[in-house]
Image (cartoon, rainbow, N blue to C red; front, top):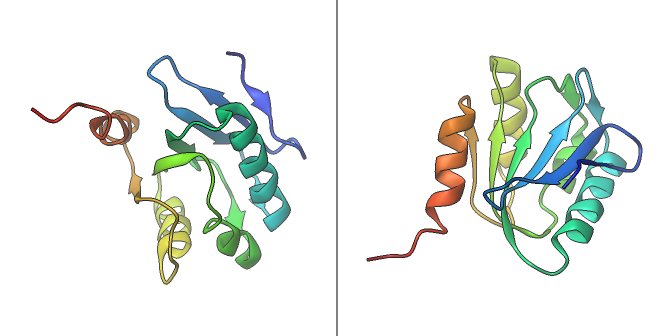
Length: 128
């Protein structure tokens, strides 16, 4: 599938070959609540009623507004969420988004894409 631009143009949604939803925010993006709601709407449209593990790439995101952080608690088609970042600012954004909120699914921060994907896919492996 070709990545689909989120309304507002600040990011894209795709599904990987492994069956993971990918939400990638554009470099230097400042996320507002409308951006998060637009992404959730596009994710739900792409998922078409099916839950998928989801990787959200915030590697180059500049900032997230307080209202956008609250919007992250909205349920979408994600069965679990890995937030991918690369620096202390990303970790602060992720920690604030996850702190003191009831998240709709298990959510963790990762600095490694490989580790994030392994965690997302481990829930899909059958238990022996």
